[in-house]
Image (cartoon, rainbow, N blue to C red; front, side, top):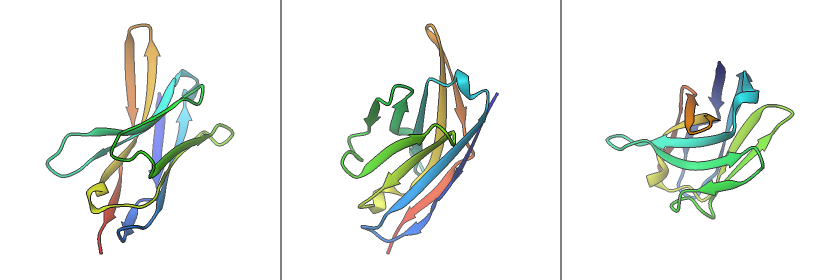
Length: 119
């Protein structure tokens, strides 16, 4: 089992910045990639950014150039630095850990943290 605990959400004005953290514990050696997803009211959950164990990253087009995902392996923590925030970035942000077993995969989720961008 893997436990993911997010922190760092809150209310920020447009153009501001926030950093989200996700601390992983448990069977973390089974995790192949960590990521951040978000879900706005009335919308489906979407991938924001992902970082693989080899450091490869990918981002949603809507956040490229504004968000940066990183990891601290010594602390088993993944971060999402969000700059130039827009009202449309408002959502619940979820930390994700993915384990891949051949053609199968399993996702672990944190409880979510609210990010609200508003003046």
